[in-house]
Length: 300
Image (cartoon, rainbow, N blue to C red; front, side, top):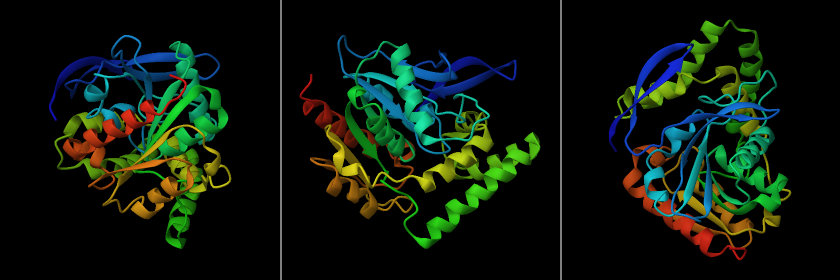
């Protein structure tokens, strides 16, 4: 991966030069009527190509989650990447974070960009958002690509304790002064990037979060379950299984394959950060998973 494309942006009204990865399309704000302003990166792809809507994971941004994959995917597809509410430059709201709102935001982005149907590609937290997008807007979703994700995330007692603690922390975050709240978020979110070549660009991405919303997002992930309707999914689905993942276990990812009718597993040897730190392994598998879903879309 290479870091070398400069972009002039503003941060709190002041200009800031950010060096972003080469091949990442320049981002721009996009206003969604009645919802707020979000941030999108878009690569047009070949004329008439199917559209992919890329949905990022918890504590990431659209660019940070997908920058290694966008150049390759854009050779074959129109690619749209968004920041979820509270993450990066995503929608700011005083409402409590809900995954369902993120799914509705995704469709609102498609509406603003004139996109009728799209393949929803979700990583980690983006997986529940992709599933909910199908559940709430079935006529809009041509297929699903679910990466490093699951139908529920609080299956063990330890996980239930962790996500329950995030619920308490979200209450604290609402009452904590901004500077302290930001400091908590920085410690939670930036540690895993220390010592990697993502460097300052990754730091610049995640420090834009609304950390109260990010904490609430973690609590929402713990409460998510698609168990009641997972087997009803009726669009082509690929599941990218991260086989060394300690965060979302391969067995839990495999449950998606076993439950969604016709779902196909695409394995990549890597952990939960393979999308950014193992691009040479992740991107080819992701591309094959997308190609498989598009080839099975009978409405094309």
